[in-house]
Length: 173
Length: 76
View 1 (tube, rainbow over the protein chains, first blue to last red):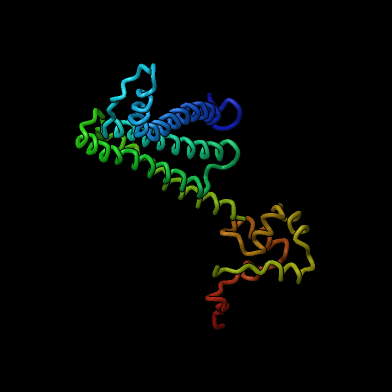
View 2: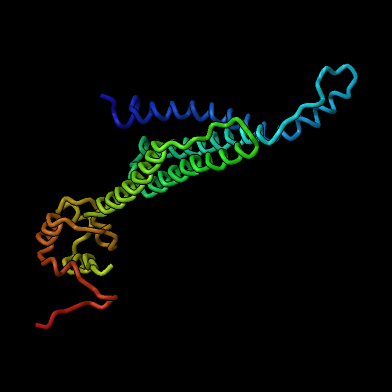
């Protein structure tokens, strides 16, 4: 049976997995952030390079707003994922090195819920922008994700009550 | 808090230290300190019973209800 805390526990395995995912998402987020900055610069730079003698580049590179919408979608997704992973790691740390029933964890769960809700609702904005600028972006809403977000908020309230009970227990003589 | 604890006064009357009481009732000094300083949120009957037994007093000698800092006393 897998232990709840300590070496080889589910929490420590999860923490290792999340650390790996965090690195991957960080790289992806950095790449997308660089792309957001670079996209507006590509046409003028390409045109400038095309004027250099011997350069074999087409100076007529056209980047429209639709491309920007696609990159923006990934920027939000990776940003939200990073934020959630950081909070989950903080939560796991309290589980591994102390008691998880503290008020701060209730706040962390609420922050995760808000971030996930923001990520889902941003799909609506991305969808509208994709329609306007004719971008090829899939931005459909999923009922199950909203149910999962509601579960996170419920968990936050459970932790808030749990933290209050733990405090009362600790201060019972 | 409306309930105040006067454990220090009873200890003083009996000439007993918190450490001695801790050893006699089997409650840690840290917990007795929480009780003495009024930080406790609850007290078990077993703890109260042990303290009263060792100090030879009634629960009412240790615990007081105060309404906005004024002690409430029933007319005899």
